[in-house]
Length: 74
Image (spheres, one colour):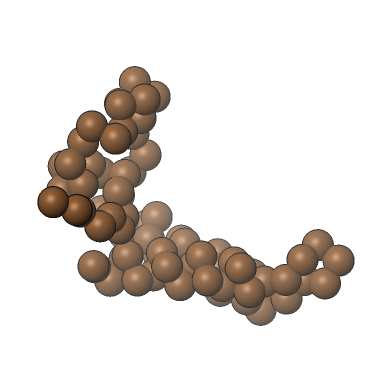
């Protein structure tokens, strides 16, 4: 796992903690955005074009620019 993988996980956790539409927690929502931005702006990951995304599951994680965190089972 990398620093960016940990930041992506934190972003997801803060997103879950950010409440609901009727009862939002803006502090956690802002933290979710901040950590997601850190991962996006790191330059280590990018979205795949549509044709490659359609065969996403055939790529090994090490050669996939979209995979932030993966568990490889052998």
